[in-house]
Figure (cartoon, rainbow, N blue to C red):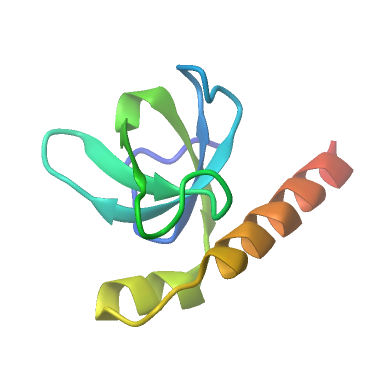
Length: 96
């Protein structure tokens, strides 16, 4: 099920570009249909990737704890993002 509106802390899968099929966590929402995403490994929280929403598949899963910390301005670490994405991918693959 694809979600229509991006949310901070949501997990998204890239559908276009050289990073196609990579998973990210949305760390910020910008104007004009863009979001900033991080995977904790190549695109760090300190320098997230700017990606168009139309080039992302937005999953219904939202990591609430990370979302709250991002919105409130508290620190989120790359290893936490990497762990969340790894667990999500593992759960998704086992559900297939």
